[in-house]
Length: 146
Image 1 (cartoon, helix red, strand yellow):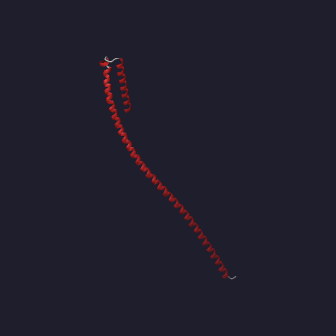
Image 2: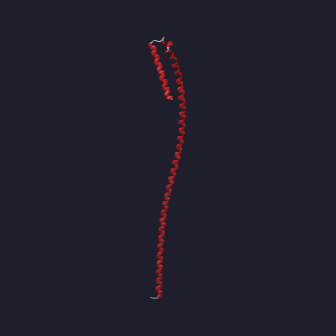
Image 3: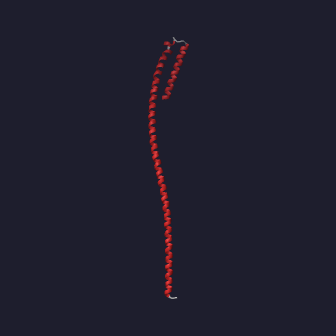
């Protein structure tokens, strides 16, 4: 064999080796591209999931704000109702105490010596029952109103 043929064979072997290395590099780059596509797709899926989570949280927050507003309005209504009830209770207590005081004032002379001599035993008993009931009613009113 001649030197030229040997050199040609060596060059050809070197070219084949370079070609093989180039094809291996191309395969490696294609594999990297596939891996990056898979990673990019996974990232897109993750981003889409996060966007859905954010949208759900935004809806939940908006619903919470709406509910808080509703509860605030309800609370205002309850406070107003309580205020009106307190006013009505105060007025009712006043309305009850006034005639009760009058009843007690009228019963007092019936129990003392001024008119007690004019009442028989049964009349005195009725006056005592009425006064006890009126005093008990006063106690109940005072206990409820503090």
